[in-house]
Length: 234
Image (cartoon, rainbow, N blue to C red):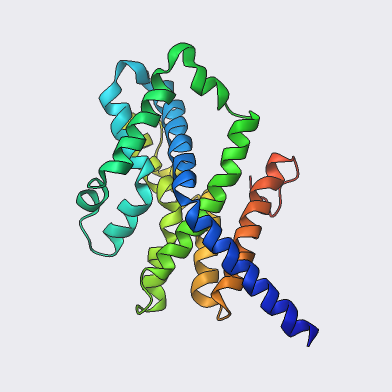
């Protein structure tokens, strides 16, 4: 009886968490856009000098921010760029964030979010919550499809790494042998794939699975920040 009550309580907690994260998703999306812009700036400036090439840095930022939809639409047979770039609200948010990260006075915005700062690490943890929810939404988008299609759609959480590989090769700072997500998957890709597998193949209440997945990805990401990486993930 106690086990049944505990399970019911956990399922209710999972439903509450899922509803809360879904309502908070526009803010988590901004967190994601900020981290993508920071990542592009750090990659782009290293080789080309982002401030001398605003069109290129904006294009790279936009495609990296929208990497998940672009990859999932492509894999599911939809026109990826057309569907991804028709959301003017998202593009406006991305453009404002890009301008602040790349061109704020005295680089004050980038200074706040430099690597290892408290703000950057807090955003990284929030990003993992958003990643887990994106994986869940990818799984829920195709409820009548087979497991493989669900898995492919849910794996949209790793799209950013795939797009980044292409961009690094275009900039001449990466190669297929050293930065290929399929050969050397990043921690983000591993977490996204594991989360997708949990949602797709574990036949239990979806709210309970959601609760476990979100808490697990937060712990796996927080451990390296605290200096105690788990399972070799960093």
